[in-house]
Length: 603
Image 1 (cartoon, helix red, strand yellow):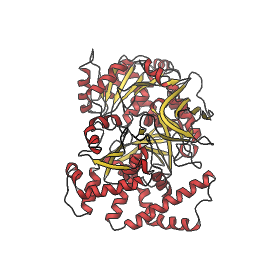
Image 2: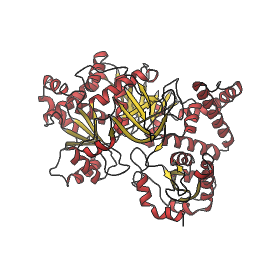
Image 3: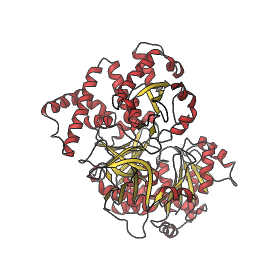
Image 4: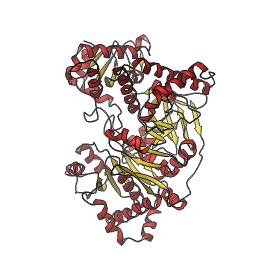
């Protein structure tokens, strides 16, 4: 059994909790900008003093409305500044904050409200309020609902009610919570089965935060550091990064509209970003397609090859297995930096020096491409149960293809069967009201992740797949679907790909089309628009997809190659129920819903 350990770099004082991080920032510099809020098209800074004032006023309102220490409050909203204020105010009032994805159905909301015993709900707007009230029809009693968008003055009414609560009463409540107390219940995304409520303690959030700041000082301790959060705050990764940024004094902005993301990146100009792989895939595929449509395809492809080669040479040099990029490669990269790379960097705001990729696996080719163009990608790894990050690559010590080193205070083991086991400051104390799950997923103090991986001699972790996702063909060949699916999604026509073949004679795939990519491809070919159902049967579309399959097949052995594929007449999306809110594939749901199409591949 191999093991890698990184020692703790920092510790929170005894008797403290998450709220002490904000209090310390305010004591250090009340005027320091900790957040930026976009109002009327312009970004306005929110100082530590302003943030603390808003948080304490709302916390008093929660107390005045009857929220006691240990009570749960739920939040259902897109990413926005008010979400953060509720989160911090809940912790100041001693409450446990329960996030709900803003795309959740009434039945999902009902389960979370019931299981968590929520006492009140914050929603983004009237539409979310309707969903919550539908969900409450199955609860014993109706809960108070407050809107964050200002139209119903929900927060204002609470703050007004809190005027009767004294500063001394609030301070007693704030300091009543310790590191071992629950700060949040985060319900797992539910790729299989009913979501489990994962307990995230004050210690999980706070100690993880102060240690990540010390682990990544080049990113988090520079005076001009700022980031833009566009991932859903209902995801533990986004909230963990918020606490990390608060601990580092990093200014944070929010955007909840993907349609406005490019505009917000340009105006906010973050220095680092938390990004999910699908964003990298879309940026690359769109840029490549536009270049080919504009007659500059050969230049783009040559530039992409140079970027990947340059990053690979630098990576080999860092590992001690190569001498780095030669003069000719450096010259090619310098040329393409003027012609191509600058425009691609502008898509991220132009000032990004590092990106951290998480939530799911990133194709190493894309990591090399973006690193090579000057947008370095540091891939990390974690789960809801590890308060998101458990390992990450470091600036100056990045090994692409791995997910990096254990975070400080974290131990990672590889079991005899290849499963990744984790113990450390970020690991949940357990699941809420679910002793069966606690017994199943914890072993000798380690959390059993269900992921399969390896550790190299220097302690870098590589994730090779999921224990349950690994396919075994009728011929006994073990096939990891991830690399093939990643390669297929690089093509602009492909939205999602699902590799199949468990117990079958060969490997097949289901492919869903990307509506935006299809429209661009058809326009470039001088063809009329068509919907996804028609495109799924179109011979030219299928021929183009065959090229994507051929490209993916070159990455694996003959026995692992995709022999046949089926094009779905619909996309696989969160709305269709086939992706989680963090854009992970619900593999079992897809296999069940499209069992007939899969059988057709082998008939």
